[in-house]
Amino acid sequence: MPMVLKRMPAIGLIILGAAALLAACGEDEAASQPPVLEVIVAAAELRDVPLTIEMVGSLRGTQDVPIRARVEGFLERMEFQEGTFVKKGDLLYSIDPQPFAAKLVEAQSELAAATTRLAQSQADLSRIRPLAEMNAVSKQDLDSAVAQEAASRASVRAAEAAVDLAEIELSYTRITAPIDGLIGLSQAKPGEFVGRDPNPVVLNTLSDIDPIRVRFSISEREYLVLARTYLSEPGAQSVRSQAKRRDDLELLLADGSLHTHTGHVVAASQSIDQETGTYTVEAAFPNPARILLPGQFARVRALYQVLEDVVVIPRQAVSEIQGLFRVYTVDGAGTVAMRAVELGPESGYDIVIESGLEAGVDVIVEGLQKVRPGMTVSVSGKEPGPSAEAAGRG
Image (cartoon, rainbow, N blue to C red):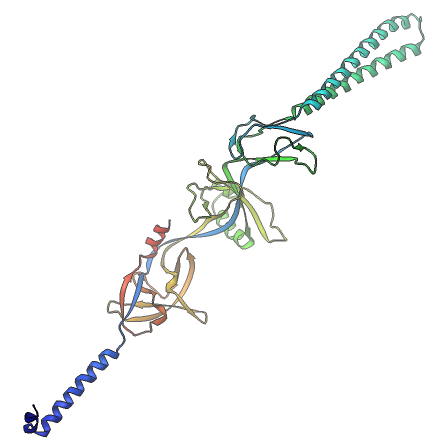
C-alpha cells in the first residue's frame, strides 16, 4: 500500500480526503438531527351536547321517624335485630310495665269508688225530689242533693280520664314500629333506664328508604338557570310544580357510578336563604334494591339545555396564554398549525368550540408542550372522539 500511495498523484490524494471528510460530516449531521416528535391526536366532532348542573346533596329517608321512650322506666327487651327491615306494628322495645300496671289498678279503683258515690248521690236525689215537691223537705236540701249528684258525676268523668291515661301510659311500655322501614343501632340496651335525660329518650331511628330522598342546595344563579328552563315550557306555573312532573334527575354516587333510576323534585323551600344565598330542594329516587342509605352523600345532575350540532373536542387539547385559547392541529402530511378558538361550555371531559375549528380536524391532545406551528410531527395514536369517550363513561 505505501508503494501505491507513492505512485498516486497528489491531486488524487486530495480528492479522496475530501470525499472521506464529506461522508463523515454527513454522518455527523444525520446523527445530530432530533427524531420526529410523536403526538397523539383526537378528531373534533359534531354532535349534540347536553348541559347539566350538578349539586351535592345528602340522602335521607322519605320518613325518618325517631323511636322515643314516651314513659320512664327500665328497658326490658329489644325485639328486633339492628340494621334490618321491620314492618309497621312490629314490637321493637319493651319497658318494665309493673309501675304503670299498678297505676292503672289504682285509677280503676278510684273509678269504681267514684261510680259508687255517683249511684249513692243519684239515689239520694231520687228520694229528695218528690219530697221537695210536697214541701216535705226544704229547697236547700234539694239544691244540696242536686249539687252532690253533679259533683259525683264529674268525679266519675275524672276517674274515667285517669283510667284512660293509665292505660295509655301502660301501652307506651310496648314500643311498636310506626312505619315499614330500616331500623338502625339502638341507643339503649336492656337493663338501662330510659325516657328521662340524661338517659336515652330517642332509642332508635326508623327510615323508609324506598323511595329515598336527596336534599341539596343550589345557588341563586343555578336556581335562575333551572327556573328559566322549567318556566319556558308551556303551562308551567313554578319551578316546583313543573319539576315534579319531570322525572329526569340523575344521581351520581360516591364511587362515581350512576344510580339506575331517575328522580324528580318532591319539595322545595319557599324562598332563597338570605344568610347562605341558596335554595333548598328535595328530590325522590326509587330505591327498590335498598342500596342507598340515609346519610350518604351524592350528586344530583339536572339537565337544563341541549346544544345541537356543535363542535366538541377533549378539554386537554386546549391551551391558554394570557386569556386567549388555542389548539394545535395536524394535517395529513403531519404539519402542525395553531388555531385561536372561542370556547363554549364544558361537558364532562369535553368542551364545546364556538368558533375557530371545524368538525373532522385532528387536534393534538398529547405533546402540546413541544409542538410549534409549521413543524412536522408523527401521529403515534388517535384517541376516540368525544362521542365515543362520553359513551364509554356512561
